Length: 159
Image (cartoon, rainbow, N blue to C red; front, top):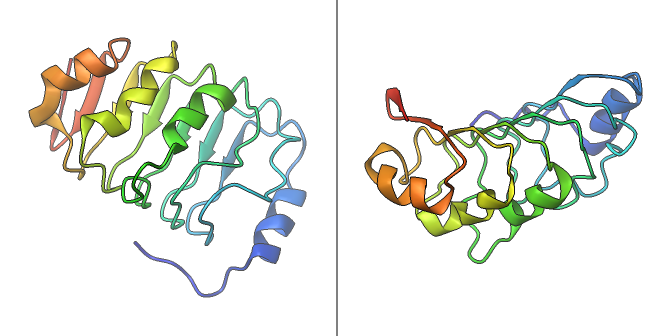
């Protein structure tokens, strides 16, 4: 993960303030944030795609209700390292129409960490590349999150 020393919380707020309320895509890649708490994201009610790759995220707590969000990129963070971290359960409350989720390189080691995703009925694709839980756990993933039809990872897709 690359984290630039040039960004600060002020830079993130300024960046978001410069975006129109009706923005469809916001890219927060490499901004140093550990959660979404305190970020002024609630005004982006119509957001369809949010990217927060390589930010140092350990939680998605603080993500406001985003009923139109269909694609969430969270690659190269640390979402799988915190024990008993309910961050994926929070996604069902805040992103009810999520269709695609990327979690590559997040330190996810058990299928149980992904079970809360079953509460996202529209979810169809999850990218788990470079996690301990990947392609080898196909049967367990299908049982844990049955609505997902494409699990990407470790060099290929499988359905």
